[in-house]
Length: 511
Image (tube, rainbow, N blue to C red; front, side, top):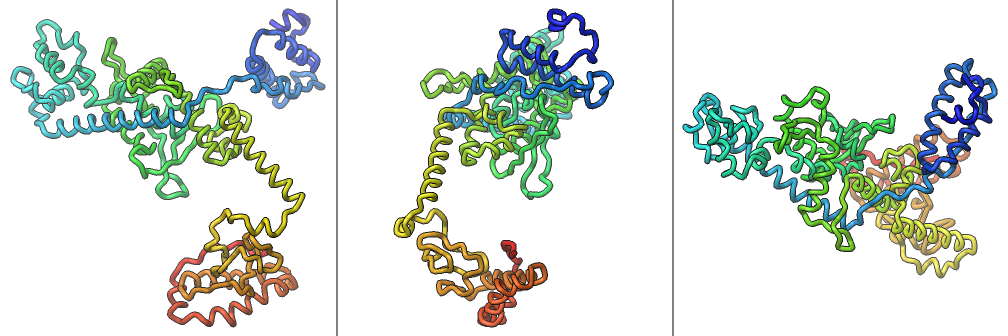
């Protein structure tokens, strides 16, 4: 369209030069689109041109240069993503927990009821009048053995001449088809609380969450007791990952296991393209479908979930809950827990750039916290430039736990006393290995302390082989002499034997 309007004489990429590309960008700026949309349109062309320059340079002009940053600050005009407050999020998760406990309890009850009846005899019996359909276990066994675990539709149960009318009325006595199905497999309304709980903890995008695979969980290669959830994100070439413990009933690995078990009965009926997906459902109202939960049904039942629990926002209005809001809310709360460090939050969100992360966490409460942090840093910088009196520093309360303020095995009587060389009163002592000659050093005679002292000695001996000889003799030889001739001989042979059986702790590098 652009070439037809502006440059109809251009018939090949060899005729496209930098001026043409700039004209195209200016043409896009005339369109009534958002900057993000204009940038997206430009990106399609830019990627194609870049590929041609790299792989087929003979097809493009030799002096073609791609304009840099054609749409600066493209995200500046983007509206912040909707997020829930902390109290709203807690209410949503509390409601999800309540539903999950009830759903899982019902499914487990169905398994127990099936285990108490003679399923083989029920499978062979064709006359329903000879079965006690008022017994819930018998009723569930009939559904499993005669109908493959799927509650027959009302139309099938009332089919003339089939003799299944007893099944229909027994279903009504047991609470209806929806209730019976909840004992056997997942339904849209029983799957949504799991999706909410998993989405809130994984920060996955709604579509990526919906398309989770059944093998999405795996053992962590480095950390015992942790499992890693992996998934794919449509706009990213990188695999998304988050690791979780199994320490709580609602931890993601436990929730995934429950969904796997509740959807397993549906696998024989699922289309092949959905068979590897986690969130499978069977709808029994209207048309019978068994497949990956559709996005429209997911959104619909998320709204029903909020309405069913009477969830409201901070103004008392009905809460407009979406799965997309869970990701934004989770990242905002995580950003606060991480000390408002956007780079750490970026890693947690699996974003390629911090700009994308900023769009998720750009909230008034976050901006105020960031302003406080910047203000505190500015105050500290000004104080450092102006200098402070020792008296003021000594009055400041220590911000750290000073009980074990050394690494070599010593315990200091007062690490804020400032009596070490180059130290100030009120400041935590930073004299690494200065404890060897400090009068405040306390050396308890126990195996743990001895283990650290022996590790320090070994580190000092090893440093003699790697450091410059003059540096080692000046800085570390006196410490090693004190350690070997004055401190270690004070420990009894029994303590030396006990210390030798303990694992050596890690120490800072001696350099």
